[in-house]
Image (cartoon, rainbow over all chains, first blue to last red; front, side, top):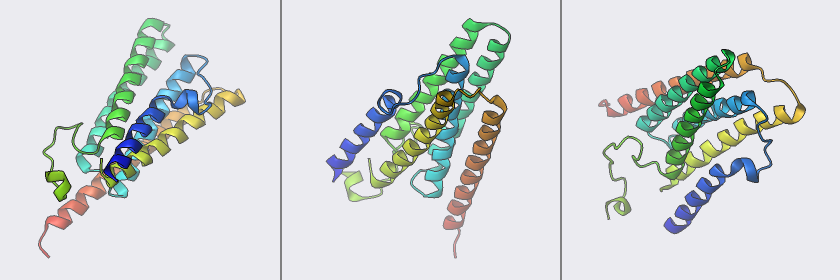
Length: 132
Length: 67
């Protein structure tokens, strides 16, 4: 069972990383499209964390970290948008890439484990298999 | 990864794909980006996560208090 779960989680990460290519999603055509993909990624993470919390499959500390990192990504996306409006394309691209990297890292961490990777929180063993 | 973690991961995957598909559909339909609409949804998602965190914290506190 444990190896099946590990396999599933590895598969999940692979799907997440390659989602755009493998699921037939439209490639972004301009800065606005890239900005929206990143912004909706942040929205999706918040929605997913909220649902997981409601279903009691995610710890509060993890959900708070999800919120904190999504806030950082949103700030970077706001700066990217402002820079783009001002014609500063280099800054806009840099801020957008930064937001994308933060969001991707958060996705990876949340998908990989729910056992304290994000916060280095002390983990309480919940079963004998956690202790051994 | 335990069952809860796997369930949380699948929930995230589901919402992430739904979000990406919305952008993809807009691009495919040739519709312009509606930035205000996206930002309004962002605020809605923020409020929902804040409420979920607050509710979970209340559950935790209630669980710690003696009956």
